[in-house]
Amino acid sequence: QVQLVESGGGLVQAGGSLKLSCAGSGITFRINAIGWYRQAPGKQRELVATISSGGSTIYADSVKGRFTISRHNAKNTIYLQMNSLKPEDTAVYYCNAPVIRTRPGSYWGQGTQVTVSS
Figure 1: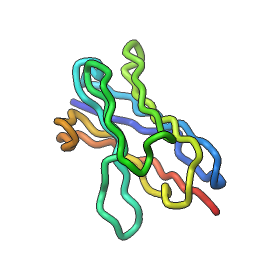
Figure 2 (figure 1 turned 90 degrees about the horizontal axis):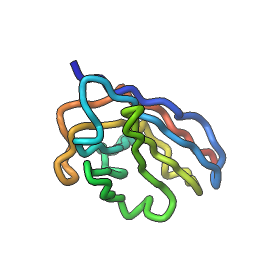
Figure 3 (figure 1 turned 135 degrees about the vertical axis):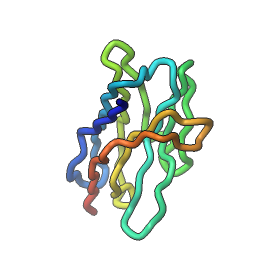
Figure 4 (figure 1 turned 90 degrees about the vertical axis):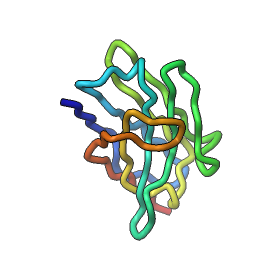
């Protein structure tokens, strides 16, 4: 049974930073592409970033240069370091696997709320 568990969300002021974590079980992150998606109120879920089995990364234009996705193989965990946060980054952030190119796979975490105040 695949489980993805996100953590690290919270309330932060604009310009601040947060680091999200997604711990996986039942799936090996180092041989799958894993992604972060987000959904703001009243909006569709959108891609934030993905990391392939080979370590290649893809970012949404809106987060390039501010967010960094990474993976810790031994912990079977991926991270999303978010810097220079903006109010428009406010959303529920979800971990997903296995990502095919930028298309989400079958497994989602429960999500973690990120709120950026102006």
